[in-house]
Structure formats: structure tokens, C-alpha cells
Amino acid sequence: MSGTLARRPVARRCARSRGVNFFGHAAIAGRFSPSPAFALGAMLPDLAAMIGARPPSSVDDDVSRGVELHHATDAAFHDLAAFRELVAGAERELRARGLSRGSARAAAHVGVELLLDGELAGERGSRDLYLRAVRAGGLLRAGRLLAWRPEAARLRFEALRLAMLARGVRREHSTAPVIARRVGIALEGRSRLALASGDELHVSEWAAAAAPRVRSAAPGIVASVLGALRGGGTNGGSTGGGGAPADRDEP
Image 1: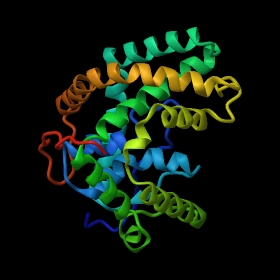
Image 2 (image 1 turned 30 degrees about the horizontal axis):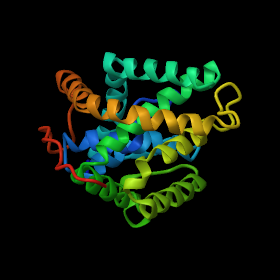
Image 3 (image 1 turned 180 degrees about the vertical axis):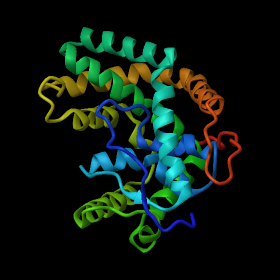
Image 4 (image 1 turned 45 degrees about the horizontal axis):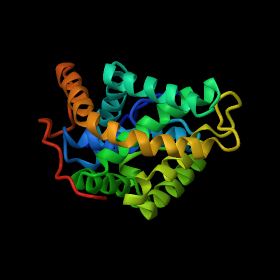
């Protein structure tokens, strides 16, 4: 933990157009440092957006570096031709299945991200680091790591954190019907993007067909993101380095 007494802001509000989802951010962080606080920081902008709060302040250097990595990862991710091609193909397929233009575009983007998350969730080490990071944000530790304002934001974060721990990371989270449900939830309340009646089934059918393509592209996408981050001088927490991907198995 930093020796300075002044808390500093560690993130800006996450934009609506995101890059990697929060689990993916933890997995990418694990390539640079085994620190749970670093992985927590890498997830914080997304988690703050999920509870409708301003991101917290922190005096912890690993948390701060993790937030920096979050924004650098999203920038690198959106620059990848392989990701853009997957999203463009998904949008065409979803349009062909009957989704409106806006819904197809948004569902393609979110759906591809969730399928990539599912691939990263096949890494035992990434799952373990994610859960340790979520635990690190707990009430007994958060006073040293995070300063949420107002108090209601801290309570909302704690409710989210406990839900994330209870949910864990399991095989069924990456099945096509669950991917479709999560896409639907992500787009709810957005008039031009929300799924229409019956669209969730079409998204599920698309996800089942697209999963093998995303699985094939995932290693190259991750390698390209890591190359961009390392080339940009990303400082991966207190340990730095950049470890190899964790052993794969089925979550």
C-alpha cells in the first residue's frame, strides 16, 4: 500500500461502450500480477457502472494500477481487427435472424464479449484470481482498499460483491441460453437497443453457432491485447512481469 495519506481518484465512470467484461479484465490482469487488489482494480470501472456509482478512491497502488490497466485493455481490445470482424459477423447473422439494426449491433458486441469471457473462464488460475479479487473488496478489507462515496454506493457494491461470490464461475454461465439472457439484461431499458419479444431465442441460437468461432479466435485476441499492453509499457502491479495463461479446464 502506498505511503501517501491523500486518497486519489482511480477511475472515471465507465462508458456505455465497453471493451472486455469484468471477468475478462481480471483474467488479463492475472497475466501481469497475481495480486487480488490489482485484479480488483482492473474490474472496478465496470463494477462501479453496474451499481450506478462513481468509482471509488484508493490509496492502494495495485488497485490504482489495475484501473489503469482496465482502460488500456479496453483501448487495445477495440483496436483489434479480429474482434471487430467477430462483431461484424455476429451483427450480420443477428440481422438475418430478424433483430432490428440497433438491437443486432448491440447484441453482437455484448454477445461476443460474453463468449470471450466464457473462454477465459476455462482457465483455473483466472477463476481463482477473480474470486480472490472479489473477496478482497469485502467490508473487512475495503476500508484499506476502497473509499466509496456516498455510503449508499458502498452498500450497493457490497451487495453486488456478495452476489458475485455466490454466483461463482460455473460451466452453465457460458451456455448459449445464459449468454442470450445476459445480453437481454444488458440491453434492457435502452429503447433503440433492447431486445424485442422473441429476440432472446435468436440470440441464443446465434451464440450456439458462434461459440466455436470465438473459441478459435480467443487465443489470438488475448495474445494481441497482451502484446499491445506490454508494448505500451503497462505496469502490471507490484510484481510486473506478465505470466503465462493459467491451466485450462472446464469451469
